[in-house]
Image (cartoon, rainbow, N blue to C red; front, side):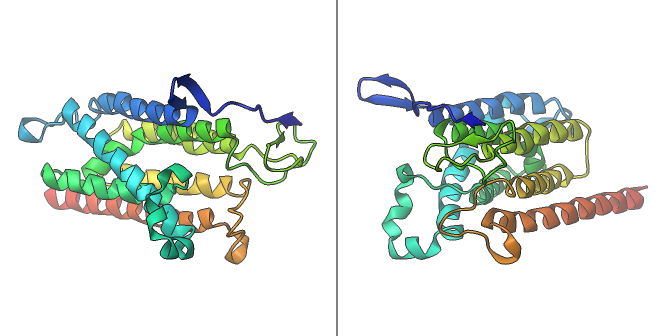
Length: 275
């Protein structure tokens, strides 16, 4: 079995200024989004848009800025509401103590959706088109975040069979080998989801189908990964032996599949009427 390398969470120290690896992974996530977003401009229907509604680099930059705000605010509020509602109800000022840690992907996703709704409304664009633009650019950012989790030795996996070649002992989790679930999530929710979604989105789809595919794909991969990830200590496993992360993925899977089908049917009906 392997031993998790003890990596200093501070990547660079310049006097009183400490640059953490986790912060660098966030910067990498934002940089990847900008790079992919600019290439997304060459996909349909964005490439052929003209006039006042044409997609430009400035749109990608604005979406990135608003998305960052949505991730931070939504991620923090989501963690407080989904994982420790009782604690933060009695300690409301600690909601703002983001330096103490505690972010939720599902909350961050809702924050991004709210930010994109504001962007779509302010720019007189279709909300579905904005979400379809954003969706394929997100998984690489998720992958970067999982790298940060692994470097920090946090969010480790459940106990694994010692014979598993990649079973790993994490400092702070005892001497028992565990699944490196951060790596599983990096590979599934990050790289694999990105490849599948990017290839799917290269061809013009019915409005809403690309973002629906993201909801479904992330929900499925996260649900699987949760079987190898240690549940939150203060929650444990909930009904049906599922973790909070899995329960939050259930509406993503069902909603993503249902919306994908519904958007496809609506597009076919519209084509039939126009024909």
